[in-house]
Length: 269
Ligand SMILES: NC(=O)c1ccc[n+]([C@@H]2O[C@H](COP(=O)([O-])OP(=O)(O)OC[C@H]3O[C@@H](n4cnc5c(N)ncnc54)[C@H](O)[C@@H]3O)[C@@H](O)[C@H]2O)c1
Image 1 (cartoon, rainbow, N blue to C red):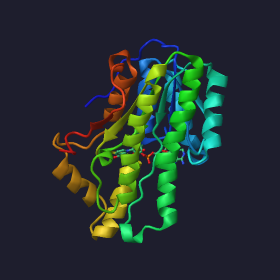
Image 2 (tube, rainbow, N blue to C red):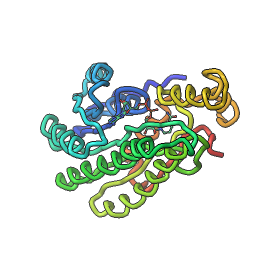
Image 3 (cartoon, protein in one colour):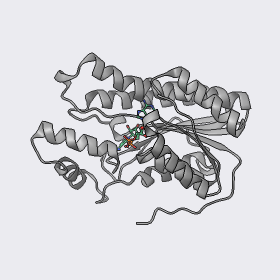
Image 4 (cartoon, helix red, strand yellow):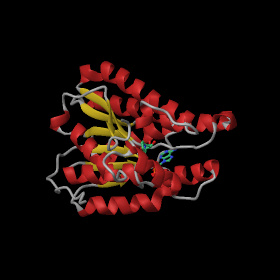
């Protein structure tokens, strides 16, 4: 399957993407660059080398790209990352994608308060603060915008050994709806993508942890779920998620707001 989309002319607009050093974030950042957006990537310091390769790829499409480091657990760092983005690339922020997230795998009776807090700080508070700081900039600019968050099929149906994760993704769905209502008046659409089993380092991690809990070999948990659950018969690639985001931020997506849209090859059915 080919995921190469056409490299389009500049839209003179910026897309800000968190957690884009790898996986789904990387696919979104490079797809939006091909769509004509200049890109600002916010990720954590240890991801710098990978972020640099994404920046190189985006520049090869003729677009501008910068890395602005932010740990989304730190609201001030998110605020500074948005400020640096418009400082360096201009007040043209039109898209913000709060993609950064973590999955931790553990039976609920073994989850400590610290374990839960980390997941909530990244997946929920990080997303809320990213949305709010981005929306403030968009309101200041006065041209509307598109705000996208990382939901999941777990925004609709949770799974054993992933309870705090599922709860954070339910929260994403709720916040997406509420923010869409409040910010419609500014021409800002707010939506979330809801992937299933995507072939990224995150799912490799889930697979390794489930292997320990279920007493099976590495690779087995993922293979079993792909076979049982995915009606389209193949694992989801990060680019499948990027296609949805590309649509939502385009003119074609302008009547859609407040939605967490499942893109999972039928895994949620
Ligand atoms: N992989 C899947 O199957 C799947 C399914 C549904 C939803 N999602 C969601 O999509 C998003 C991306 O998932 P992925 O599979 O690409 O994950 P990944 O683990 O492959 O990549 C996560 C990215 O987030 C960055 N990151 C981690 N902690 C951060 C922090 N505190 N601040 C800033 N950046 C941070 C990492 O450096 C990395 O670039 C997540 O929110 C995830 O919950 C993934």
